[in-house]
Length: 207
Image (cartoon, rainbow, N blue to C red; front, side, top):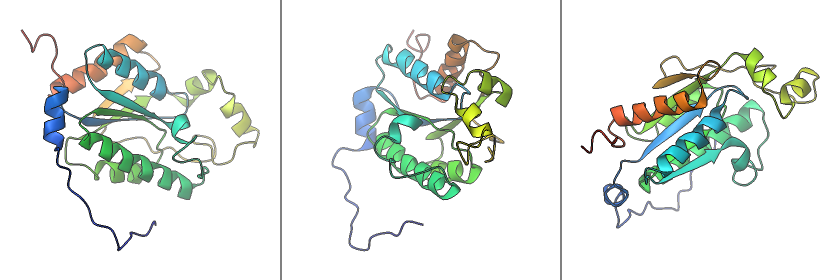
């Protein structure tokens, strides 16, 4: 576990989260997309962001591969490093929520305990877990990077779904069947969730 510095003091911002949300004209929230590699997390997260962007909503996607190029480039894929990877992302997503924007994260995040830790960093309702449900057989068929093939050949250790477990969410805020649904239909499910929770306003709400 990372030790906490004893020589730091939390400084409260002059501009509050509520003020930032008023400026953006929508609430902030974390959309946490989880699922196996190839389940469509990144594709769906970016498609949702594109939809929200055209509604004038402030967003940012934290993508698993992109984050490992910088913030988490010192981490591997052992269980210990996976835990630290998600811890860092959770803390970053929390800060972005305070900035008043909608943060979309696309990470396998295979362990329930780590996802719960990220959820518990923010107030109730600020973390929406979205499970991209897709059979591993379909994920392997979609595997444009050839990662599953390498994992089955023993070239990639600790690969989720092969020699490292994936713990599916038991009570996600939303389950998206990314095997059967079109991308457009999947996006609409996420948008409907945001509207139902009062995070964004739909055109109908504005009438």
